Image (cartoon, rainbow, N blue to C red; front, side, top):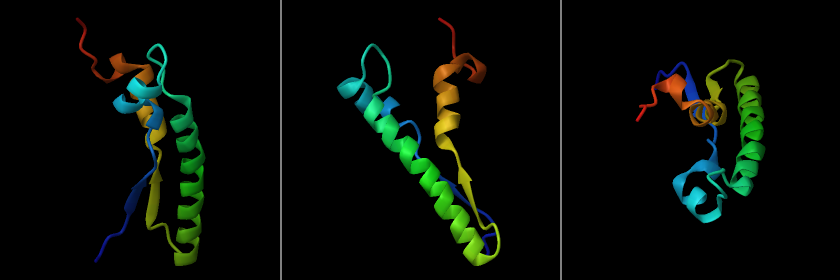
Length: 85
């Protein structure tokens, strides 16, 4: 269909989504089990994309690390325009 690059987004911080914070989080901290699952999944996704690109002979697919981006938002919200009360 003419696409030259396709972004493939890995999992974000699954333990920090509101449902997991409510069900499993302690003292506002992200739930550890879903965090660990995402930490296992993301490197495997990158490996799979690298293998696919190697098989195709070009870098058509680009892995996006959503975990790091979203962790930046969570750990330093003021850098991204957090409103002050």
